[in-house]
Amino acid sequence: MVEKSNWSQTNEDLGQAAKKIKSKINQEDLTDDLKESLKITIKSTTALLENILVSIDSTINDEEIKQETKDLFSSINSELKTAVRNFHDKVQDLNFNEVKLEEE
Image (cartoon, rainbow, N blue to C red; front, side, top):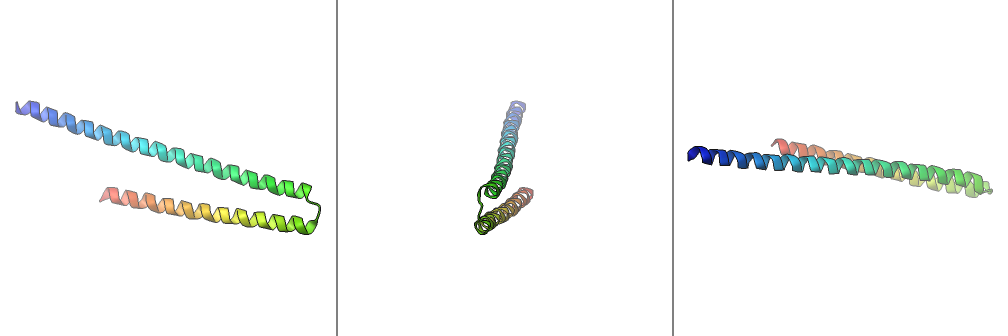
């Protein structure tokens, strides 16, 4: 009877471990999907800004307006890069803190 109880407990423990592993894998898959989506969004935004700059060059004839518009888009591009870097740093901090908590 004790052996049956031990097997039952072992089976239950294995089931819980399997659930935790599956949950962790699902979280990692979701994280990977989000990272990939963010990379694609950043690349698309970069390409869009580059296309806008090319369009500005080819369509605006007034040099002063052209330069002001280019400066504006360069500023926007710079702010986006800074925001992405800050976001990346925060995510890295979160990942580090999560790993640290799991170790404790």
